[in-house]
Image (cartoon, rainbow over all chains, first blue to last red; front, side):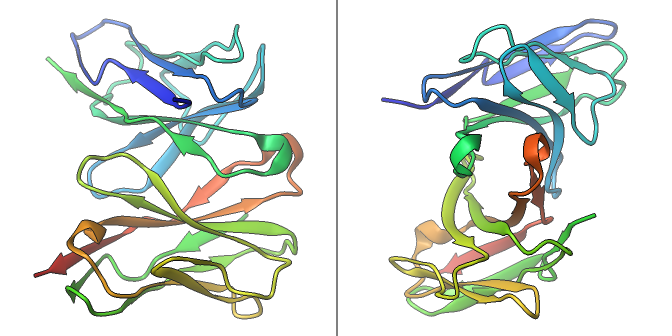
Length: 113
Length: 117
């Protein structure tokens, strides 16, 4: 089945530690996105990538980094510079050329130890 | 800059009844898409319905339909014959398709819908 896989489902971070959230898609989509969702809030865009080896900052990129070395993969690193990382993280992808809607993974919940 | 406003933080409806969720948006663009997404307690984000701005006909997907008023910049979602499985957060989203490589979604804050038995 085609889809988006996020792992792990739950992640814990210690103070001063970098952690990486995985996002893989087999939909052959060009565009991929990372969102952060806090309780009772909408989605806020962290980073997005329209093509391999290229990505742009979203609205809340500080304390995060990404890479897009392969079309199917868009990992997100939450660095120690992100002082409030506890949130639900959603990865999405879309076929941007045809303006197709974004498809989402099941999310990763990140908490501070 | 585009904005999306959902003025109803919480709503409830009895099973089998109809409910309408409101969404307004602000843009100077003429060519865009609008979406409704559903996020049930499982937290997975699911596309409910999509509307292209150039289409005058309102989109419909089974029990879900929209009332798209382009001049008023309004995009409400109607859920008919509500079912318990419709209990979820509902998000309205806007995409400017003339934005080139900045073609990203602008999200509302969501409406929490509870369907009561």
